[in-house]
Image 1: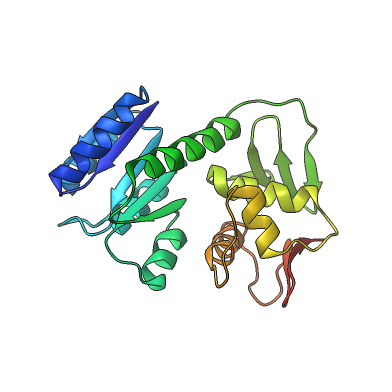
Image 2 (image 1 turned 90 degrees about the horizontal axis):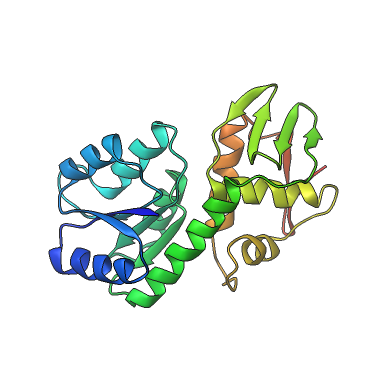
Length: 226
């Protein structure tokens, strides 16, 4: 597995590289956004770790660039900030996870492993049947999603969210349940992560925000696909 690490703090980038190499990951390390862009364009990357505050093109812009290219591999944002607005910005642009500096390198490695497991599962065939919902086709075999026969570029995390809701079709799924089943972590109060990802999925499905066709909001309870 190939991991792109982008951080202009060389000590942090070097530390992350050491821990990832100890887990047998191949690391593409970049200290500048210019080198990162070249790596994104030329290398086969399986996961990216992006520093938000890197100079020139910041981590948010790099994340957006990755998603605009149709690349769906996981993106983990690193930041010294902890403002909720920054976290929402990163998630809205397609980031999968968010880690605040200073961080425990072992926790970062655990997050990387979790994201890659999800990404590998997303790209591995299974024998389950497809799900069809009013023009929406969720293909469990190829881990792809079609809307009126047009492919929707979902990240592995977005696919898992949509699939979980589809598998529980007709039932209301709370944000807490969705977070703990998909992210495999304990849900904390005032966590906007699920809401941001649902919003992004709706955008990709061209949903009417006032009257969504597929993912309905049950106010005060959660979400459901009818």
